[in-house]
Image 1 (cartoon, chains in turn green, red, purple):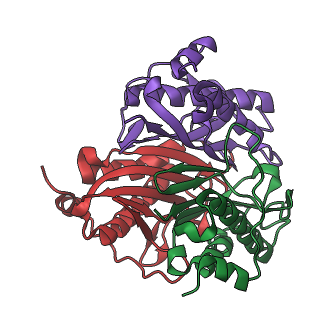
Image 2 (image 1 turned 45 degrees about the horizontal axis):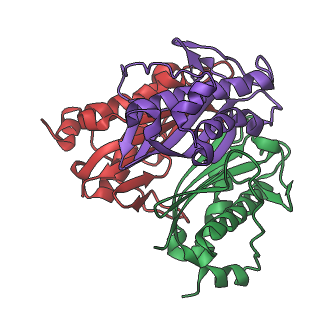
Length: 154
Length: 154
Length: 154
């Protein structure tokens, strides 16, 4: 059994630094062994990489990549809060918000971009409860936003 | 005091089988005595029964039936995870997502379709915190999706 | 260090009475030291004060006031459930739903109306994890709805 950090390395994924919080909220709030994360959007180096509504500016395969990038950012936040990605016991819940153009109803396929990566990195411990919904718009015109709850090892 | 299983029988509701998970997420994730469910949509025998936006293809009364069906599916998932519906201590939280056409603002009335059934089945233990919101679209063009958290008896 | 009740007084905020629940759900469900609230909308004296979509009928600054009013209502509910606002240990999580017109992508700025007030009242204990999303419509045509989780002192 490889560890999450080994799997990330195998996948060629390097977790990005977590931006310092500048506002009245925080990237991650802890309660007991739960890590409740703030919504993660598909940014890289501080820029939104996938923007627009899925079904209009954003195609399904790009939306899945956006969801995958959100999951990478979520893992970065979780790892920093837990003291390393290998200190995360399991992924508990993921809500996937998809900015959806009129008529787009494949939010569950978009969400697989997040879910599949979490499963790849954490194995069975990555299998989470999930809701996927299609919203009107997201902050900074992000195509996808995910809301993740991790459990840390105690 | 009748039990939830007795009340389901009185209401003529038979909980459906829970589909086996085939993806990187699960119908229900447990943490302590909490059961966090994946989003439930108004399916019966694997087919979405109520599809489209409420306020356009779907009328309010049908949307309430959709929310009720979502709650039945949620109880099925919860019962399987808990070892029977009578092993559920209470309903903690329900978020109701309503696929909403331009101008439809009665999401709370749609949500009553879920809430009323949960109260009927669980009595006072069915009274939950709730949020109801109107989204753009839902997976498979579902009219309603609900996100439920149960507490199990320990 | 002043207490939350002292800060509310300094800000000139009087928490409103919490309406008695009349339906199959409750304003607040408790689990352990967690208070999970029902969605709070920008009502005052039982009327929605800020209604419509942000980016159309509702301007950004009014939407921020709407979010602030939602947070006041949330504190009222939390205070009643906890036995007073000073019995709340910290704010854990806030999901901010913004009724968003086509093209409005500043949900995070709207959400600051809630977050900043919570930080002002609770200090560092008010800093929470947060998600902000833009939805199609909200109950009673509310401009904003927030879903809050508090932790109570034990």
